[in-house]
Length: 299
Image (cartoon, rainbow, N blue to C red; front, side, top):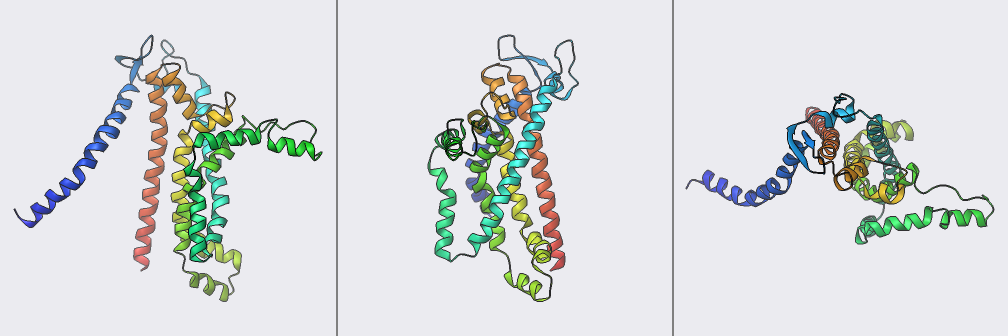
């Protein structure tokens, strides 16, 4: 056996189990969902094996009225989910960007401690942490009781079961996902460039937009993608902090599979979410490739 053949054999042994695992538990279920999204829903749940594109038409508006009726509520839920996910990305970035700068300037021992604090919430159950927010935001919760006791308000504020409560919960959950990529980019900053810019009279604001922001853009884009994708399809946070008043895509998909038993329509909704995620990932890869190519040409 030649060296090249031996290397291919060793690579096959290493990658074979992982490839088989992904094929069985990722590719095959994904393929089943794609096929199911184009099938007709059964009368009492399940599917009927006939081609039925109206699952997507029910969402996008080209459903055959003989079989399905277009309801704008679904596209409204889709747009609301996009808006909440985008606002979550912006809010997490506003919180994490200055925090990452602060942590990056600390001594090494304090850096490790702060990074540990960022990951500390993962040591407890997500449901437990979200119900703590319910106790804080409800009409008889900590915030309303404090405001009433100090005379700021006379009647409780409606904070729970709103879009704001969901965004707050999303930000709380996804802060580590934004912080780590942003922190990694800031750690790679060459502070000599910043000092040189200031010495040449650029000023703090111009230095930030011309030096700091372009150099940390990869971390911002990476963190935004990592936060946006799970925020778009999340159903735990909307279920706990949104209740029945705020419906998002994740909650709608879960209801179609478990309550309505309309598996084809639930699969079509899930495929639309995956299509948005795929577009974002492709855009991220293209932008990253162009930035790397530009950097290589500059060097």
